[in-house]
Image (cartoon, rainbow, N blue to C red; front, side, top):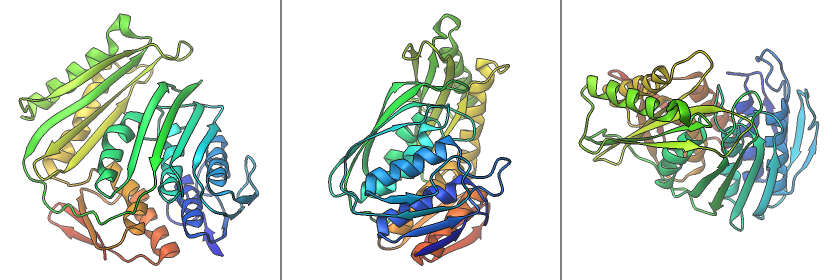
Length: 346
């Protein structure tokens, strides 16, 4: 049985999500304590609880301690069959985070998985936007052999949520991921979304501001293209977001996103995303800061040597490496090379 102390490293919900996923994949029972101990409100919140319950559905697990506020959990997995799975968050809790928790398990299912999540947040604080997963994470994971797609039925924002999305995943064998050269920039693309804010041209203003900032910083390839989506899927919750991604001639894909917030102009939201992307482009990282920690479990589960460069060691990156080394006996090395960190799994 895996014994995991959830207060280690970041002490965040990520430890819970990844520990449950590894338990399901390896078919080894898990006992995790001090769940989210370092957070202001420790224990399982609604979105963490739904992640555990969804994982249990995916692998026919028995679970003890799966209740709101619980800081201790026993998870005993069964076979990962696949099929159709439904999840309901009931708050503005992050749908992307639930997808991140479930995706590794889905890859190891016997049959394809269709995971439908309702009444959650597609674009919320302290989590990647749904379109970052769709246009940055999944295309990158495709290079490791993952075959997955995300479809958004309804966008959802804080505080009501009410978003809805579906992830479909085909079983796959994970392979090594080697990105050591940044190469030359080919294109910058993006998607700017607003929900029931088209009268104020929010999505267009976000996109224009992002393009202007990129141009001012000499990133203006001929095929720059940020699509504008004036969404009307959720009449109960207005909001906006923007995601940008850059591709190079060595197949490197780095991204950045930003979320509309009360008191923030559309222009500041677009510029915020562009600033984050420019930082990645200036440092020539082969994996952006926010994608780096998301890749770790897939790299750890894959066979062979994987390597990439990122511009900083985030707390989540260090935590995920620690957890994969603890649970899977993976061997990672971290080396500072000029202004980047070289992450390698041998």
